[in-house]
Image 1 (cartoon, helix red, strand yellow):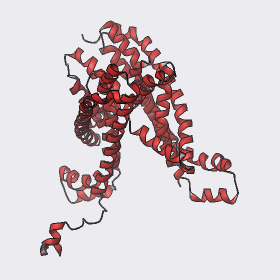
Image 2 (image 1 turned 120 degrees about the vertical axis):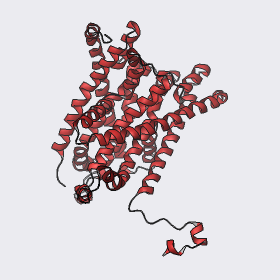
Image 3 (image 1 turned 180 degrees about the horizontal axis):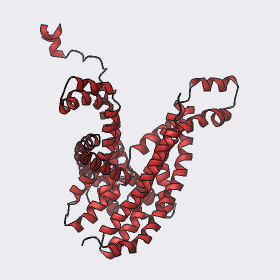
Image 4 (image 1 turned 60 degrees about the horizontal axis):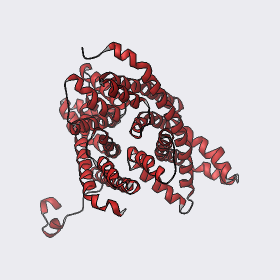
Length: 233
Length: 218
């Protein structure tokens, strides 16, 4: 264990890259999930079909194959991505495809009356989605999205295979230098576990936060000190 | 023309061999996952002092760490303590144990779904512990979770590509080998992806149908 101590800062840098990849992948995945999930329910065929093909292809192959394809095969079309960009793209598209099914599932699970009511009130399609459908569907999406994010974190380890210097990659470097295999892989297993655990805690916090049935928030300190009649009554 | 059809046709048989290896890994790995997962789930549910807690941590830890790092750990650390397996065996055991943590959770959901009255009836009939699991609880619990287990089978089929990193020569391994020897990655990578799709999409369809078939009103 002691022989890897001098290399801990290096592992720390790797951990930062892993976290950066997770956050960037998450942002892309959420955007892709909503775009593909909503497009797949569109009445327009030219929106629905590409979204369906995208979701099925990215859910039907493994993220490593997609990453290798972006990294090795895409250059034959004259597009050479830097490894970091290929990594974020593969992570975001892959987990985004899983997210798209979550978005679609949460929206279709709403009672039909909600959509019909919104139509009866002659809300525009945008208003229907923004003010009626999504506010009710989003809380149901949070727990499964939390799982997707933990998966995303774990999948970031695969980017080490296309030379992105993430936690796993730096661990390999430390292993090659020190030979302390058990210590270094044991350390990063624990690090991954801690980050994954923090992610799942974060998602259950968010779940409680957006729960439509949660009790009203307690008064803050300032509201107690300076009671505002209009707000209080 | 970017895509070379004759080259593509030439490499397909070789890639199909890789697909066969992938299928073998998946089947054996899933067998391990099903058995170990069931054992873990039953022990956790039985609340054996210490051991149940250990298994709970096992499930949490395995689910919270990447398969790739687990595979590296087994691949590099085991030989240093004198345990030497081929990459293929190591890979199958790692992926099987990795998925056992997921199947354990699936079984747990199934066990929890069995009505309390069933347990009470077991006590009333004074069935032994073995009899109650074997003849009453598990047959009902497992039936309910077969589709969920099927989804993990498909997931494992796709995830087995990760074992390429510890030099297991499966479908992705065949594809990269062709790529590095011919300097053409487009065809092998695309065909490998299509082969993955060709198995996983129909399999997912089949599981969907199975799910509808097994669904029963409660």
